[in-house]
Length: 219
Image (cartoon, rainbow, N blue to C red; front, side, top):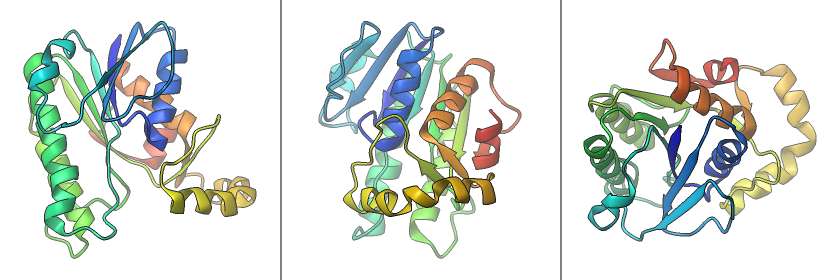
């Protein structure tokens, strides 16, 4: 299986990249993003590209792919709805529309978030935008598309968030995470579990197209 990862330098993307490089069923891993991962591996090819809204200059490197793991996202803090939608809707759709044209047999796996609102009419701005993104992705003619809505994600194996606030949160909460995971097993997932679940989705599919944390943990 040849896979593409977007957002490979973020916390979720780091976890997915690790599992892809370790998995014997993955032959080729391509990362696409504005910054390099600074990792070296025989399977790994990196495409550093500054504008994900326009992939015309790198399309020749985006063919022959079986799956895309889309892990790009931005916090809504301090952003207007238009600014947030440009990153989380317009950019996502620009990438997806290019990929489905180049790889119609691809499986597209999108990391959304718990609480996403597919009615697109709710009061929470980020949830509306993410819901609009999910709806649009599910309407594209991929072989299959899955929307993932993890809750609390616990980083493992040296994976770190790029967001300072999240790093501080995990530093404070780390001693309590085993207890929280025991109390709320359907709401918490590790980066290792998430990465492995995404690979399972790409390889074998699933009965649901929108997956919550419990579905991901089961995978």
